[in-house]
Image (cartoon, rainbow, N blue to C red; front, side, top):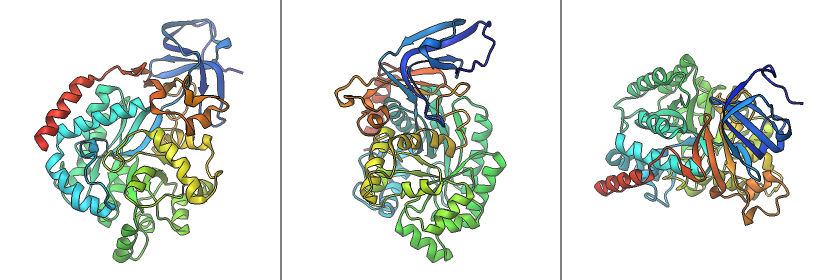
Length: 446
């Protein structure tokens, strides 16, 4: 039965209607409409249901026939350093500590500034939208430039100015970074596309006092906090040597872990660590390709899920991954889990898709508005064209998405009720201009 949130006799103005699609809602019941319609008013889903039950009192401004297509929520990229596309292809074949200390941090001092952050983020956003992502959580520098890209392109972003105990390319002190976080929060509070997060780099780059203060700031502003955690054995050994405990226990004792906290990587977790993460309500973002490329290890995603921990998915930055497709990341996760656990049943196709969508929204406290397709939620979804050889025969759309779909199958993307990619054409981005500026800037740096 369809429940209408209005009187049937009222005329309803609809900005965009998409009909005839196979809709995968990814809601709690994983409801589907084999031939369904979505009606959007403003930036929210006004009505959704079978084509045969479309209300007759809608006045529609634009209608799209999506017959034969699949509609599902956009992918949620739970962790990124988007503007590091400027460093893509450099500093390869290194462990994380050598990669950071011997290459990345020295390179950032020379190469990272407001212009390169803007252009690098723009490049990553192009790649993300083209592969079906509609939101990303960013931890880097000059995050006002990341917000600028989101506003120009229509992309949704969670911005977090990276906090270290030492100077960064954008801020001389951690206090300046936290103050800038306050300013960003004040500036973008209530923004339709942009949220702010307290972005603490890692336990090994931030003092206990700084981590405690950052956690208090997130609580004061009532926003999420995110941090790299338990990523390598080097980190485990360092924190044990400094504080006599695991990185997870260290953060737990500093009151940093909570329902608003998102822990990235989380590769090396003892049973006690996992229990602390569960008890605190902390979410985990796994980053399979980055961890594999750097030789860091693999997060035990299936085990965390069995314990009841919310696990989401991210690409990490382009320099430690080299691509920005969350679809590819999800498909890599599926295979990695099976190889590591010798178990083809460790994560189902439906669970993989939830990890790539609603779980990310839940991690950042945005699941009331994002992550699934439901009446009243924001209209953020992708239209997929499955009329491709690698989709046939189409026995199960979830399995096809989890194992066969390619990024180029994403035909259109709607974010906040607006079309940002239509038939593979990015509506708000002048790609020729961006390409020209990127080549010019890269030529000045190399």
